[in-house]
Image (cartoon, rainbow, N blue to C red; front, top):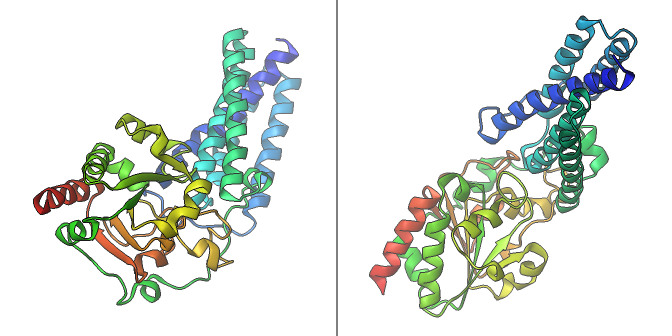
Length: 347
């Protein structure tokens, strides 16, 4: 066995195992199966120790290519490392994690290509790895995070903000589709903010129908797209494009934020952390410093959400209790369809 073969074998086992188990944990977090995971003291030191052990086993494998035990040791230790790396990461940062895991998968494929002496696998793996790393850097800037912190798992600040009862107690105003139809009657400008809830409910086509209905009444409709809204970067753009919503209606955060004060109604559909004002007001919040959409500045805000449950960051959202906000508690698709029916009946 050549030196290239043994090094590539060790790297493929290490990176591949980290990617596999880390992806399982990321999936569990996104689906809500894993909530409030324990953050062990010294977890970063533990991660470094695991990495050093895996590297040591890799050196053993390179020195003695017949040491099968060393390879499976790498796989086992790396699998534990993948869990440990992702388990303590705050949910608001999951889009960055996904981009990073995507990069890892490409690097693992590249290393496997060297093992199999497959040039195509080496090239494609390198491209995926590089693009994933570039995307991670872009997402870090969008989230106002440090890529160094991402790589070393320093993700979450302790939240010392108010509890959900303190934020929401007696302040949340629930509404009905019929009341919201009256609110939307005759408005000049509406900005729709899509989020993860819209994606889960597959409500993009209903959103398109609502857009058509409002525009037929002379209302200007635009979409405010946060760079990390949804499961992964660009998720909202893909879903809205699938519903044939014109690209020119999709406005990036920096472009749309200055216009919220001139917006009659902002409709937030299943978004949470990306519109949470606490990112600006609470320095100890898990999302402190994260750029957000300034939905709160619109004259009126409609939030379509199944409940007051927190977003990935696990914190309450003061927007839901704001004086200019009304809540429509419903699944995003059903809420949109009910609102469309109410608008048609009021015409």
